[in-house]
Image (cartoon, rainbow, N blue to C red; front, side, top):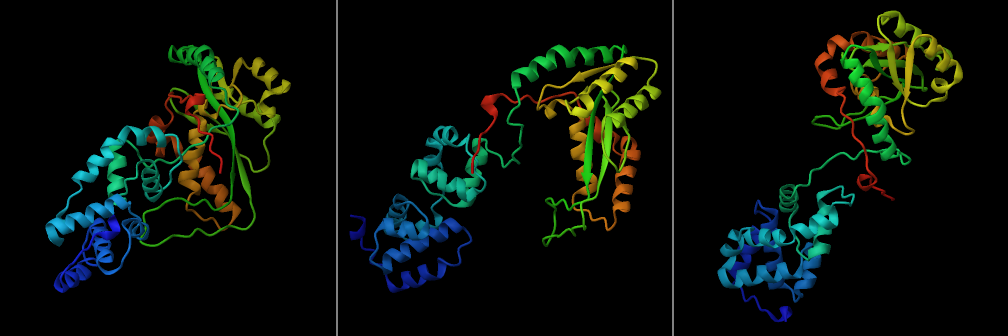
Length: 353
């Protein structure tokens, strides 16, 4: 029956409509005017007009009846109250059916809402609605697929927390240890700019190795940097370095299960030095605060930076770690807190392309 509606607009109204449909500031108002203009000029169903304008046929029907009842002024002044109430009535359903999805753009979200409810809306309106509903545009993270949240929780409660307590009482030093490998390669990121920025790509893939440790309480950063490789001998040398500057108390070290750290020689040397090794559960970088330091290093030294020689790249890394405790003291205190995120299976998204 929607095809039988006759607009019967005067020539002046059609000229006015044709003029305004390209000049109204509000994109949704433009869409309404386009719909009415098409209805007045071509024998199309509301559904066909909706397909052309990416709108639901019910919306097209409502706009046409508004124009017939109140004229163009009523169509232009039509606010979004009715539309908002439509979306509000679907609020919980939308949350329930989209909270587990990977929706990257507002346009995708708009189509998802339309599929679920049959209600279409402008991108600006959809953005306001989903923000009001509690959605935020967040960068997705990743976790090791084999991480076991129960083992992580048990390790945190039975091993890490008692070690932290011992350290706070002054009975030991607690360090979080790991080795990072920084590669001379272009790292791009988001920047505020009038035009798109490009970072030169250096030839080759030179790298520098940084065995490091973070004091759990003071956030002191200690490193042993080399440009060759990391093996058990380097880790043993690093443990001796830690002991040289922390002789007055026993040392506890949190570290992962890399072979060069978990081998018999390293464990024996640690025991001889009075150092207790607290090996993390498998696949648990989220329980090692030094992982945050490595990301912070990349952000400050690598992202958006170009080094034309390996020497300059190595210099930048060494200078960063020589001054990080002084230059970024306040940032490290907030970054390297002893707060840890545990990932329950219910919160981990299994997303396949």
